[in-house]
Length: 86
Image (tube, rainbow, N blue to C red; front, side, top):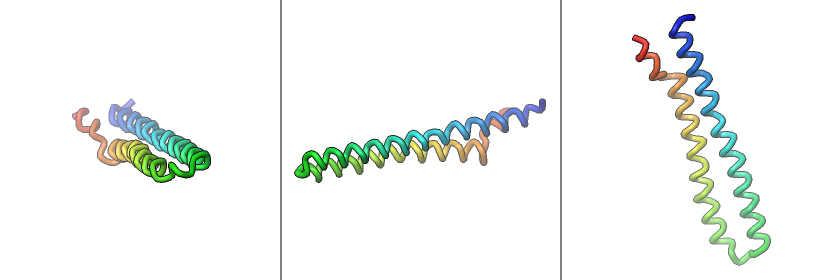
């Protein structure tokens, strides 16, 4: 097996695994939004505090998905491991 093909294959597998961060982020945001709506339904007067906390937590959760996308794009397009073969 050619070492370049091995590195490219492993990079493709790593990029696929990095995309799993998006699945976790989607599940996390859905759960957070559901719990926030449930909290507002139980205590409508706490709407402002709950919504502020929800927006901050969704922004933090979304960065996980963005990091996974960036890692997968780096592995597929720039591939820093190819330079180590030479």
